[in-house]
Image (tube, rainbow, N blue to C red; front, side, top):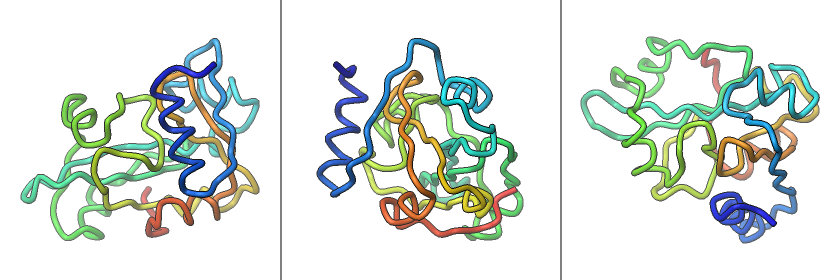
Length: 156
């Protein structure tokens, strides 16, 4: 039995036509290293969801980065056309409907401009958050691109 937030995400996946299974683990998957250990994969295979905020527009921006990469905010600002900053936990929950550490790639409160780290496409399978800090799901990078409609870019 999944927790309410993980079940909500599982239902979203199904409604979008994806058959991936959400797994809730006894240990936290909040950080990329914890998630990789729990999933039994490399840190680079973790698709970490990071929410930023446009400094001028206030619009949310979702960057799904490889767990081994750090997002280059100056480079991302060039891609989106305005300076960006890390979003606060309250902003993240308000705009996505999920808490930091469990933000899935889709199923958010509002539509988010989404950028996908090109480095995720080096792997045949990746793992992403699924609604809470203990929930993950496995997918192919091409599935991530299909479900999010995100732009593949260099984010590091």
